[in-house]
Amino acid sequence: MSDFWNPYAALAPRQRRLLGVAAVAAVLLLWSLLAVSGLVSATKLPAPWDVLAALAYLGWHEGQSMLLTATLWSVGRLLVAGALVIAIGIPVGIAMGAAPRVNAVLSPLVDPFRSAPVVALLPILVMWLGIGETMKIAFLFIGAVVYLIPMVRDAIQAVPQSYWIGARDLGATPWECVQRAVIPMAMPRIADAVIVGFSVMWTYITVAEYVNARQGLGQLIQNARRFSAWDQVFAGIIVIIALALATYQFMVWLKRRLYPWETEQ
Image (cartoon, rainbow, N blue to C red; front, side):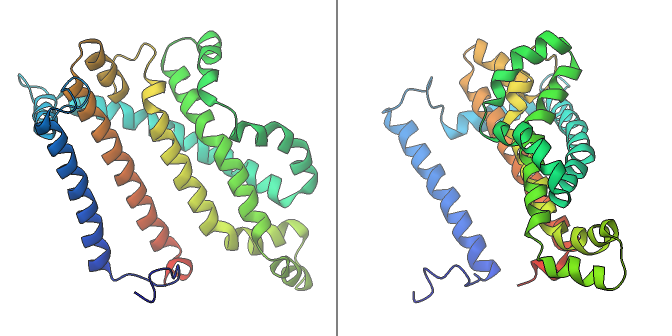
C-alpha cells in the first residue's frame, strides 16, 4: 500500500481489469438490490433484467432492429460532425497557438464558449438552419469545436521554445519551425483534444436528436420516454455510454499506435 497515493505507479493490466470489473459488478449488485427491495419504484429505476429485456426487444423485434438503425444514424451524424471539427478546429487552434496576433484576435471569440451553455444555442440553430440534419450536425460541431480549438492552441503553446529555436538555428523559416518542429511535438496532446471532442459530441447526441429526428438513439430515448417505457430509456442510455466508451478506447488505442514514443510507460 506504499504506492497507493503514488500517481506515477502503473498498475498491472490484470489488476486494472479486475478492479474495473469489480466496480461494475458492485454497481449492478446495488442496482439489483434496490430493484428487488422496492425502495425505488420501477417507473423511476427499472430492474437490470428489465433493461436487458428491453435491449433484446430493441435489438430485434418483428424482423427488424430498431437499436441498430438508431445507432447507425447517431454514429453517422457524429462522424460527419467529427470530421468537420477536425478539419476546422485543428487548423484554427494551431494558428492561434503559433501566432500571438491570431490568438489575441480569436481568443475573446472562442474562450468564453467553453463555459457557455451550448444547449442554449439550440433554438437559435433551429431558427437559422431549420430542423433537418444540418442543424443537428451543426449543434454537435459547435458543442465539440469550442473545446477542441483552445486545447489545440494550448498544446502548441506547451511545446518548449527550444524546439522552435533549434529549428530556426538550422535555417528554417518561422513557419517551417512551427510546421516541422512544434506541431509534431504537440500532436499527442492534439490527439487528446480530438478524443475530448468526440466524447463531448456523445454527451450532446440526445440533445441534437431531440428536434425532429426520425431516427437516432436520442429519438429512440425520447419516444420511449413519451410512452413511459423507462426500461427502454435506460437501455438507450446504456447503449450511448457503451458507444462513447468504445469510441474513447479506440481513439486511445489509435493514439498509442501513432505516438508510441509519447504513450509508452
